[in-house]
Amino acid sequence: MSERAVPFYCPYCADEDLRPHGARDGAWQCMSCGRAFALSFLGVGVAG
Image (tube, rainbow, N blue to C red; front, side, top):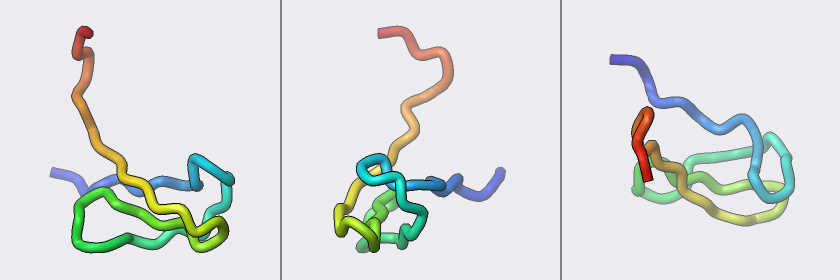
């Protein structure tokens, strides 16, 4: 099992200053634009 991947940049402003946000897994906050977002993995080769 590998460690969780982290995002390299904010999907809104493309800045790289990201920090974990709250207790939810996969939640990140951009310190540049102030937006919070969550990432999730849906699967490999999942149709539809």
